[in-house]
Image 1 (cartoon, rainbow, N blue to C red):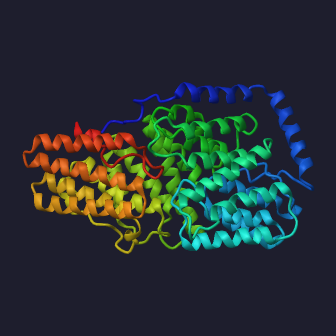
Image 2 (image 1 turned 90 degrees about the vertical axis):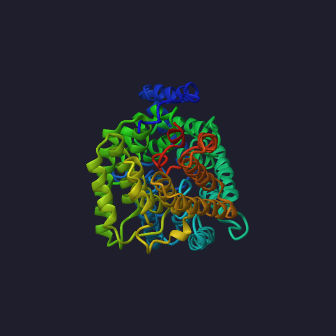
Image 3 (image 1 turned 120 degrees about the horizontal axis):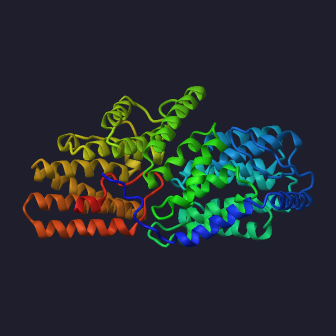
Length: 491
């Protein structure tokens, strides 16, 4: 299968202008440094006893002044750096250490609440929402802090407020609006700009092919790039903003820098491969994900993690995709063999669910091994597959295609009916994005069954419907690409 990642050029001139503006500012050198010093002075004047902590060089450098005790400021900076790299486990742990050493540090509790909200990943479950609300309440209850810090706390409170009544998209938008106010109130605060940019990107609808929100996020990030080119959040969020075929080339520099900015962070080692995948840079994607798998294994070993960390599984999926694109079938088969040895995932996370289902399905279908596709089953069986109907659908889709191609129409029809049931389950849960992805799979499988039964016009109609629906939506960050693109199946 050839890459489907360089065919478009959607809005690149506008984005290029934003990017070039950031690069030109970066080249101003002395003037930029002088402005940065002035901005630090202004912000420092607003924050009594403020300090700019520098995180460990292995995590990246951040400048986030707080009024908490001097003893915790450097650790707080490290926690913010890991938060920007979505290393949520470590961020929460470090923010908790901050609150233990300085119980009056409201921003430490803010950090805990932020660590429990994963804007680009799956919504937090009930337990995480309860813990997040508790952290916000503690942040608001402690004495001290500054007006700016209270505004940050109020912003994350907007996300957790009435979580028993309001749905996730409503609360995510409320948080975005609150961060917009923080950014407007403190325009010199680059951390506010970064968190606002992430919120804007997180609320981008997958059906918007103009990428308006991604462009707005990139504009905000470009304003920070010149002053803090080694900030982990800038590189990370630029990758997410440009993780689309027509825009990906604009993030290539950020992709190649991010792993050097935060080499101790497994997610920072992996994220460049999002851009490498979009651009068909398969060797770089492979190297990126091999490093991620090794780092994830080491982190799991060091922390005594029970089961395989989702970061490792996520990297294994991108690794399989890249190997198959290069025709390195033996290497892809080795990844699949390693996956089959896994008996437990460390946490029931979205990335884990996708990888566990996608890797065997992707390998069987790319190899046109229809008999193996028919026999696929969710593994490990102990994983809570019921929580991820769309992940189960990946396996069902592979079985349906396999059955249609091996002359088992009754089996194929049963699997297609199961896809329809999973689609309806997702729609009932108001998960329209994944419901549409399952509908694409249902239409494609039904098309190939019709083709096998000699119903050519019906087959073409079904496959065109699948291809058009897939074209109308964008890929989720959890996947390097469709298991088999619908337009390829149509072709």
